[in-house]
Length: 228
Image 1 (cartoon, one colour):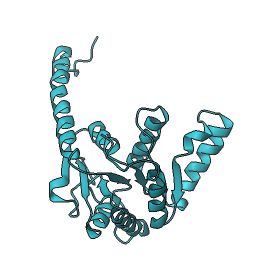
Image 2 (cartoon, rainbow, N blue to C red):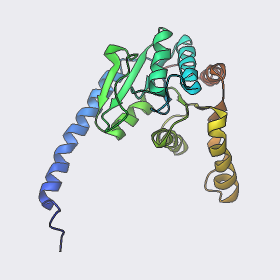
Image 3 (cartoon, one colour):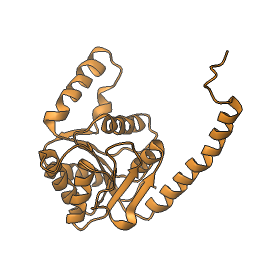
Image 4 (cartoon, one colour):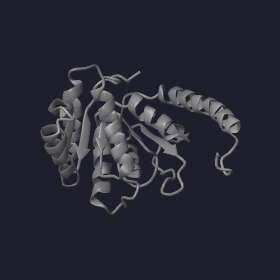
């Protein structure tokens, strides 16, 4: 017997069908807004990093250095590393994009996003499509589960040839080295669930100059243009 607390099944199906229109509208909204923006690099990281944290300060430097090279910056639009990324873009006089999402905690707009480039989303998966589709590279600062989700989804899409290759740069050797060592030891060497070549586009660095060097070397092979 179906639990009495469940909604009527037909009502659930009807609600799901109508939700498709809201999902579609978010994609159209995102595509139209983002297609007007030039080449950008996405910066990910923890919303919990305070301005006095060294990684917050490093994220500001990384973003400022990136916009000096002619790229814009895309962040999740919230506090912490996201704020630092937009702050660096703002200080460097570059494009500063925020892809915000409504969350029960942590998320709120930061003040360094260009006013005409502050986008709001309800669905994580739509927001993640915007990150991937309109980025020329990912810079991944220390973060939590959301940061790991964005990192591994991008690696998976590249690995399966669903998107073009672009550089994935992990900033903070102290933070990321253990994860990379585990992937190599367990996934690559012990169980062979990942090929060593799958890690070729992942770079582990500590300094903002290393980030722009990697981006420049990668795009010396290609014309710098948006991924659309």
